[in-house]
Structure formats: structure tokens, C-alpha cells
Image 1 (cartoon, rainbow, N blue to C red):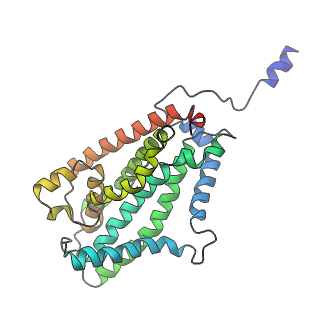
Image 2 (image 1 turned 135 degrees about the vertical axis):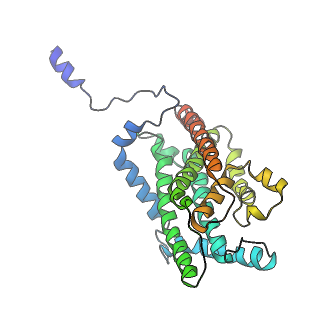
Image 3 (image 1 turned 30 degrees about the vertical axis):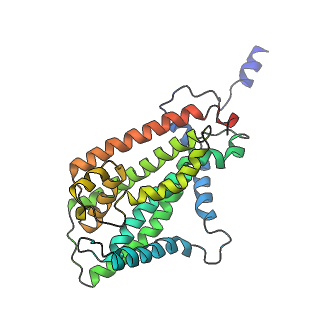
Length: 286
């Protein structure tokens, strides 16, 4: 009888409370990797599901935003772009910023948007924000192809771009952008379970943050004082680094890279700590 009871208690998976606040739960995430890929596919496909133009919308947003910025900031305001054609300069900034902003905004509502699912079935909760970042990265790849097409067009037409070793840092820059978007998103998502006002703050706060980041202007064209204040924004380093990798312009060096790596790591660490702490009882307050 005891042997039969032992066999019945030999469970494949044992669910217990996560007592570690600094844990990505990589083992559980790997075990549920099929769910991660399924959610990633769902988020990506749902973007253009039941639309007339389908995947064309992935290109529509950066194209229309770039045209608007070229007209307003390039033609009317006459802002400098460090010798880079306006279209390429603004499209580069828009592509990188869209990747960050969507990682941030979509992750910031993950608890609220998926409360019904969280309350019915168990799976590592961190899979949900990770799936958002992965699906957003796939969308970024699609938009990056558009950027490369414009990039090649200008090179064919005689634009001289000085390639440096910074180009090899592009994957690192993208990882750091994803880390900041994921970390900040998890922080906000965790706090909105109690303070729902933050969800409204994110809506217009991300727009204000964009103008505090060199998306539509060149940092080198600003005054020393203005440049000093903008350097407190960690996305400033990453936008400048993104342009440095592709266009060879921007105020970015190895020291900036080390600083932003440290800042991004701290942001992600704080996000994971708060997320792991709040996931235990968020369903009672969301």
C-alpha cells in the first residue's frame, strides 16, 4: 500500500511558491518554451489579423512617422542631421524608438491585459512579458529590413558612410534596448495592480520621453547644457549608439556603452524583483 502511494506521489511537476525575488526562473521558462513560442506567434499574428493590408501595416507606421518628421523638423524647423539625409536620419531614430516604446508600453499592461488567463491556469508569469519582447523584436526585424532598403538606396546614390567597429556593437545595443523596455514595463505593470493611475501616465509619458531622447534631432547640434540633461536619459545613449552603428554619427563611445550596460542591467534587475514580488498576489488587487 505504501509503495502504491509513493508511485502516485511521483509528480512530473510540483508547483510551489517562488521565494526568490531575483529569479528569471529560466528552468521553468525553458520547460514552458512551447507556450512562449505560441504566445509570441499570437502577439505577432494578432497585429495584422483581419486587416485589409495585412503585414503592410508593419511598414506603414515608420514610413508615415518619418514623412511627418522630415516635413516638420527637417523642412520647416531646419534641424540638422549631421550631414545624413533627413529620411535616413529620422527613419533610423523611429525604428529604434518604436522597438523600445512597444516593448515598454505593451509590457506595462501585461498583468491587467492577461488577468483572466493568470487566474485560471499556472505557468511562469514572466513568460508573458518575454513573449511580448520577442514578438516586438520580430516586428522590429521587419521594420529594420525597410531601414536597410533605404540605407542601401542612399549608398548606391553616392552617400559616404564611414563604417567603424561600432557596427559590431549593434546586437548589444538591441539587447540593451529590449532590457530597458522589459525592465521598465515590468516595473510599471507591477505597480499598476495597486496604482491604476500609472497606466494613464504611460500613455502620454512615452510621448514626452520621446522628445527627451534624440529621435528627431541630433545630440551633437545641442548646447552643452542641453546635452548634459539629456544624458540622464539612458535611452539617449542607446539611440546615439544605434545611429553610431549604422550611420557612423552620434556622440557615443566605449565609456557610454559600459555605462548604459550597467544602467540597463539595474533596470531589468529592479523590474524582475518587483515583478516576482507582485505576481504572488496581484490577482487579488488587479
